[in-house]
Length: 238
Length: 102
Image (cartoon, one colour):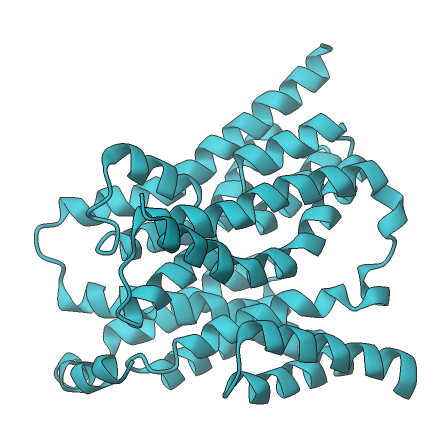
C-alpha cells in the first residue's frame, strides 16, 4: 500500500470532512429528536453511511411510517449510487475483490465525484488513495454523529452560524470541476431546470432523481457522432 | 431489549443493506455487459454533473437571498481557486449578509 497516495487521499478528503461535519452533527441531533438512542444514531451512520437518506430515514421513522416504506425510501434516495457504481467500474477494475467490496461501502457522493475527477486529471486511482479519501470522511462522520447526538439541542439553528451554506457551495464546486466534460452546459442546464421544477411540483427528495434523470436522458439522446469528435480534445485538456 | 427498539435495529440494518445494494449493483450490471453501448456511455459520463446539479440549483433558487449571493460569489472564486476557498468565501458572504447588512 502506497503511503503517499494514502496521505494524498486524506488531504483531498479534508475539505469534504469540513463541509459534511455540521451535517453529521445535525443528523445525530435530529435522530435523538426522532426517538433514536445515541447508539442507534451512531449505528445508522456507521452502517448506512449516506447523509441525505439517513435524514429521510429518521424523519419517516419519527412519523411512524411502516418499516418497509422507510427502507424503500432510503433505497430510492440512494438509487443514484447504482449509477455511481456503474460509472466508477472502469476506474477500480484493478482492485482485489475485498478492496472492491470495501470501496462500494465507502461510495458516497464526494467519493464518487473525486474518483471521477482524479481519473479525469490523469492521476491513478489506487486503493491507498481511495481508502485515505474514504476514511477521512467516514471516521469524522461517526464522531460528528456521536457529538451531535450527545449535544442534541445545543446545536440549535445551524443557520445562525452559517453552516447551511456549506453543502450547496461544496456541491457547486464539484459541478464546476466537471466543466471540461463533453456537453457540460446543456446537461447542467437541463438538470437545473428539471430539479427546480421537481422541487416545486413534486417535492424533496424526488428533485434529485428527476433532475438527474433529465440531464442523463439528454446526454443519451443527443447525436453521438458529434459527441465522439468533441470528446478527445476536451479530455486531453483536462 | 424491548421489541420496539429491536424493530428499529432491524430497520437500520435493512436500510444499510438496501444502500449497499445500490453501491454494488451498478458495478455488477455494467461488468455483465461485454460492450458498453455508446449511448449508455454518454449517459454515464453525464451522471456526475447531472446529479450534483440537482443538489445545487434548488438551493440557489429556494435558499434565500443570502445563500444565493454566497453561491454566486463562490462560483466566481471557483473559476480560479480551490473548493476550500469557495467554502470559506461562501461562508463569509452569508455571515456578512446575516449579521452586518440585514
